[in-house]
Image 1 (spheres, rainbow, N blue to C red):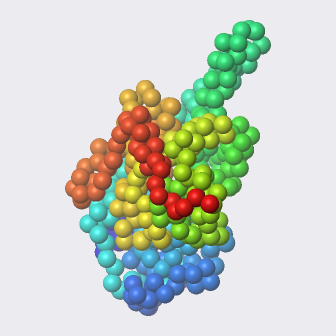
Image 2: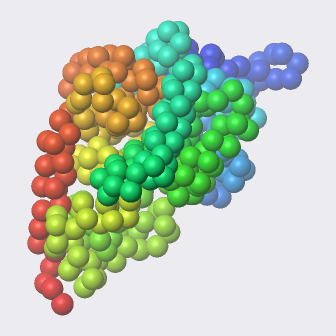
Image 3: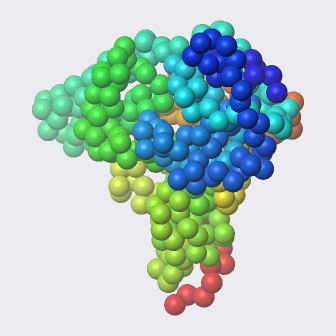
Length: 391
């Protein structure tokens, strides 16, 4: 495996040099041996053909423990490149165990890594300061307009319009929290964290700490029924008949039973889907559902050697004109976002042709649908299925 391609964005690490500057002997680790180290108390991963023991790093990992546990005992190169900036690479040598003796890189993964390198050279991973500035100004304008409508007019229509503006404010605040959770959108880490708390906890009413843990687990194991919490909505909703049997949730660390209540509620989920989300002010979550619920699902952890393929199979793009990008918050380019989560959303439309061509080259799905088609696909996914006898 070409390490310079694999570690493209951060450069090649000289993990096998000792403190005196000379080479040090490193052991060879087979893929079979790597698989044996896949628990929280003994956790190895491979990155760029090198094997690391990250057991002691597990409690301190900024992305939480679940991404590491999901990829434990496997080659995590693609996921590492997707989620880590160059500043993370110098942290690796302290965990070095050895070199992978039998690395296997699929043609799709090799091309994905080359595309990461290309996008890095083009500066596409760099933050875009203009977008958050414009978003903050738009949110302020929405807030002031909503307040003025209520204060200056007793008209019910004006109050209704004010409520709609507040709804748009919540949506834009959620997108900003989402952006800042994936990449820095403000100059310092402290300001970025403050923005997350203000947009998530204060405006949207979502704990940003809980959301990041949930969202990181979703991204790493996208559409895994037992690893992805965004598919675990029992007893209210089931995206697959596989959930009709008890399944252990790795995220919630408990078995998800399919009892009498679930059988009843899931039978009517196609009718309750929108009322449930709208009643709980979870309009944004509808967007997430459209992007994934009708796509392919699986059971088990993601395999490091097909991570790229899994992301494309589990995601759906929403086609829309450029002037509607602000409404979808960049999530209409869900395939692109899952493959390159650190690229600012204002550049996702630019990289879409590259991703589409890569999928076509390797005969991988690049699913896209209009907003209304995606809604219809989601409802079809939630249509009544045999869920066992009612009781």
